[in-house]
Length: 551
Image (cartoon, rainbow, N blue to C red; front, top):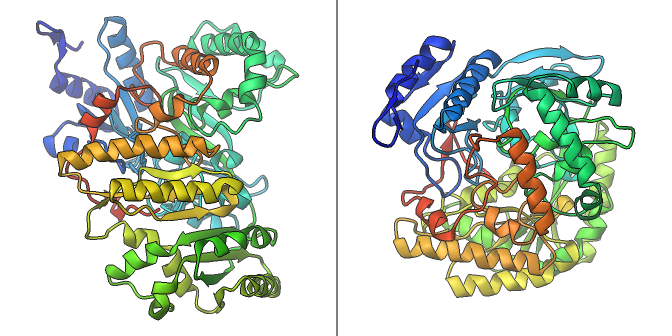
């Protein structure tokens, strides 16, 4: 058994690594270079782990969890941090203790049921690999994020992430059927809707799965009024565990899947996933509209959204000015000084005629609003270049472009006032704050520029985070629409959540993780000074799984 010694009971990591290597099929790595690589995710934060474990199957994850559970019984907490590609921008894919890296081995498609359009996969598979395989059968899962080339399915589930097409087809939760989850104890939980009778049977089990069901069922019953009034049907965003409102139906049936979605590895480790897919046209056409002012562009959005596009994006013209400074060229470059905003609309349909008809109608509406419309269905590459402008800006040479505010929710009727508030913050902090919005899901993106090698800029970044967050809530929005809160946004989200709801969320976490060993620090409040200490000084555009971070 592992030796724990020293005046403070410090764990001997090399011995732990050797012990785990003897008992799992995967690998344990604690080399300096590996630990350095896994100290960062796509956020501005940095935490060095003690070792990186690359499991090959569910059994490996169970053995790691059981080992840390036994250590916790002896008073020694060795955290487990679940990680996919590390594209999380809230600091949820980093932490002390053991990093469970699913991208080395757990990347397989285990089963495909064409008739039911269901697919069973391991969590480390990328969305692109999965959809490439499904496309051979005409199927797709449309909730994929913009970073689908390297982002994993497990990571998207952990964040209940939104994607480029989520405004029309829903976020990740709309496509997940069942999950296999390794609990902190090493027991395996199979989620899915089960009847009241089956719930009673599982509650009678003398293992940790039975204990979870007993306590969650009781917690829901004890807090029914709070859940109905403060969580169910409310626009609370993804902070905390709002999925609790969807766990228990009136007939007594229970499904814990909504609770795991967006939990960021704090309730268990996802080891297998069953997702549904559908026949969605792979053919799409785009239209680009150039406006001299942002307000005019915004005024056109409701009419265009009524045409049911697959995606609808609006970009502040300043983004293109920044991209041009990096050498990019666009068809409207000569008129760039007059570009106040750019609107990109995409439609998908199996019928070429139907796509062309919808684009033609959209073009007429936009031209009436004073837009210059670029509508060449045969020039999709040009449209993709426009739609990827935020990726170009993300590598700009004037400083570190920080993904602090990706996926903020702002109601459409408050966007005008919010944009004005952001413009004031831009002047106050002397940093460009152009906006980009996914209109159909009301998700706003804003990436400030600082020099994180400067202590003063790191301090200013945290201060901007605080004031930007205040502006979001002052305009009836919330910070976590496209992802969960992680470490970075927890404080600023929880200030605006009912105290009773926060207490409920704490109780949920305690049920699943009584030792606080699953991703500690994530989805938990942290002192601002302590958060500032985690901000890294060597930030540049992260490279994850061989790819540069995209919006």
